Image 1 (cartoon, rainbow, N blue to C red):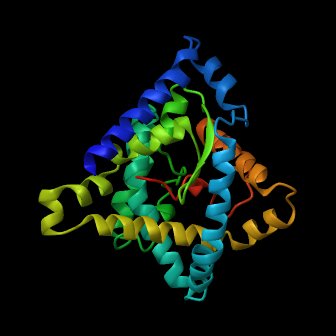
Image 2 (cartoon, rainbow, N blue to C red):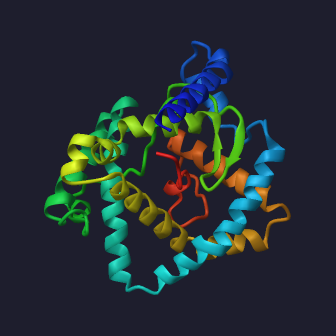
Length: 267
């Protein structure tokens, strides 16, 4: 099974190199602006993607939305603390990508926030770092990083359970596994056998996904009610949000926590 996963990752990476960097030039920021500012992406597998979209839509209605609504009944303080803990752990992946993007100011703020919130904030339940002026610059992932490096989005498609993605972001998911200390700790056999397991990582990821879904129940309902083609609307929203994060735009995407649009992912 592990060998199959490795082969799949290699195949995705090879596909990405072929479809994205073949057109990359040496113009740096001009290439980036020309590729990532465009909120469209070619549909390479639209038939497959629409089938997967219907599957995910049904799964959301049967499982994710009911769980999110149940989660919404919990006390606000509990939900806020849970969200803070998840975001605090997630900041370690953001820190890695801040550094890879050469954004050392944001890396300093991210590292400072993690240290303060993990200690004074008791594992991130509270956010005392904000009171100290350490700004939360939003989440970063490896898909954004290679976008900053100049790779265009490549094909858009929808994966079962995981949802919308692009060739660039699919490669980013693989990169996230190597860059995320939480993933590495929980999947390292020597460490995991003593203190953690892979299940801890998936509990953390699942909790973040439920928290995101709970925050956006009304947003999704409104989008569904006002969309002629919900598939196309979600595609547009996903691509706009990814481009916004890559160029660090100040434009607004109408979800409560749009920095999470890449999740649920495979890392």
